[in-house]
Image (cartoon, rainbow, N blue to C red; front, side, top):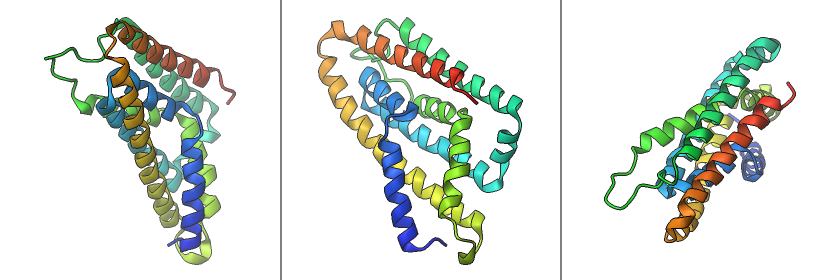
Length: 208
């Protein structure tokens, strides 16, 4: 079990990392602006859940295998970029329909949760980040390193959920105000689509 001081230091650094502009929080904000608070919250929770897969990979050492295989790393990276590209194209083609019209039932939140999970889980650089980050706070003298990494990873996922939830609520409120002007709706969707496509290009073009 990590010490209290270690947990506190880890939490502080994790919050700074989560707040720093990156693909996940930008996607949460984009979804919240274009489709509302509920969609952004679900997408953000999906991203946080996706972190759990990377935590498991790092804890079990699977991420080491990914890092050792350039071909596997490239395949996973391109799959993630392709998924983000598909989300971006869907947003661009929506013509402002991502935000449900009055009297139309909203899309199931599980769909946004799944989208956030897949977008995060298919990013191998997140897996490698956890593989490099978590061991820095694990002390073999305090017991199982794998257990300590698991605990630290759960702390990271928990604070990510809270921060992404806050971002989604704030961006969703702004999006709701903007939605009172119908002409802005399509532009919100185009902004969201451009964001997804830009992130896809960035992930695909990053050096291994």
